[in-house]
Image (cartoon, rainbow, N blue to C red; front, top):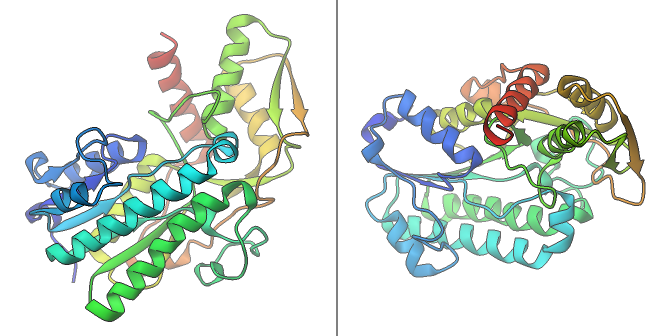
Length: 314
């Protein structure tokens, strides 16, 4: 049975973040009154503390857990301990607090980084436990994957309605643009835009460029998460993605052309590529709750560059 979210009180953790802002917008679009959506920030409620988790779930009917510590490869290599602890303890405590409070449904958003390093492409949900994650993402990926075990265990023992979603790399307007911890698309947009302004002859990109990635436009991801919150009620994890991949080298050339940069690209092969290849099998999401991505990579990157140019550079 589909849940009428417009009649529910919803806790949206990470609601002020990149993905959270789009999920909030999607909920409003589907008729949920903004007064029914609670989006506490980390300064208001630190979910690493049990008391904050108890306060957060009070009076909530539905929890959509997006709050996370996350970054690109450089950030992951620098702060693996913090990434593991913060993500694990937030999710574990929040789900337990929700169970104790009698929350109707818990939507846990995991990460594609949970998959083993050499998972056969396309990644199927049943492959999650067939190896260790890629080392640069392992602390984050394992912390988030532990929440799948918790969700399945709670469903089995307590009948707790917890679902688990696995979105691929997200991007779009409002993304985090930072030299230190941005993901690949905003990092490349930032580098090429900066090189244009400074008239630099070349841009340095990490790795060999031979790794491939799948990307999902953030607005599509938000729609998939809310679709699942309304209509999905099973223990099995579900991938959310576009089903298409691109080599990082080709991605860099695409962003170079779209930003109008005329210089060269130098590949710093001393830097890690990360997981060699990444593309999801997205058939389960379509079968179970009708989700399909609708934004092409070119459309999404164009919208992201436009937002960055008009909002950050202006």
